[in-house]
Image (cartoon, rainbow, N blue to C red; front, side, top):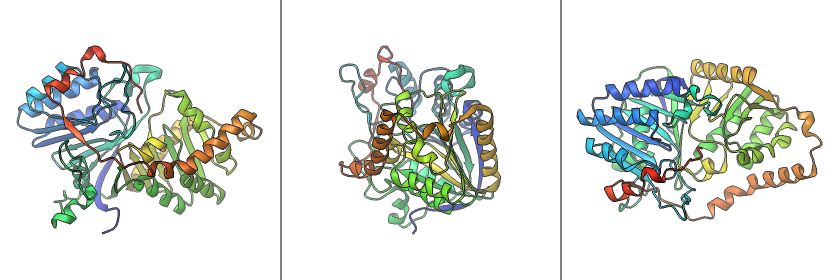
Length: 416
């Protein structure tokens, strides 16, 4: 069996921002008959989070199996009442790597559950970068985030369902094989949903065991085959040396390479590192466009006429070397054309292009930072691989654990 499993016969639909994502997901949860599985980095107790809570508690009470897993860093401020109401309705609630605060600060920063997945009745799924919080809605003004997700129906949903159930619980040994090998070891393939469309789709995940570089490698394979265009929109862009090299090589052989990056960053220090790479990329002919309307939270790309990806993975060290991530890779001309059109509209209406002329003679400090940033991307993966691997573990939230997340302790959080 190959490392990745492409599935034929899927229907895919692009969802932009919370205005399209939340109503569609909530509609499907309300119509669920058997099972709802949700994994998310952030769940806040705001209007969006409370609406999700109401829908999944109602589903659980009518006999639907509901499993919700949140991250211990991104969602650590859930109140005791919020958790108790979910548990009382029968929702199976888990937290990935929960941890106490140390002197009031969160210390469990690295190796997070960063993927965002929803699976409904094993036939419909959502994968993307949108969390459950109001800052994904445009009515939040300049603080709202630009982001995307994919609704998918068809055979690949079986793979998404298998991944969403693959996190071991505390007290159980981690699986010895990757999530995609489970059915191979048992000798029984999962029952695939019926074909629903024409798209060819692959689910790729990143973990800290067998799939450490799957998402990045699929990017690199596609970049090597690019002939006409590459458009990447990414919130936190500080990729590894090999991916940067493929971007530069594509631009040098005449491919139009466009990057849409933060121009109005929610974490300015991250953009400082990204901008240290600008000169190196621009010298090879890469176009750099900074999105200025509001923070961009997207993790999407299109290459040529029919390759696209949408998911949770940034192109930065946290996503590429530490976090648990999930992206859909899609071969479909109609979907790719739609996403490409959307990204071109961002470039034309909401971006400023970085002028390569302004990068030719940088100040000495900027030149030094660029040099350090470049070599950091070159050696960071080897450094990370030298660290002990960490088996992912989720814990069922109990009443005593819930008390640690009292609403009075809730502090503002940075979202990735």
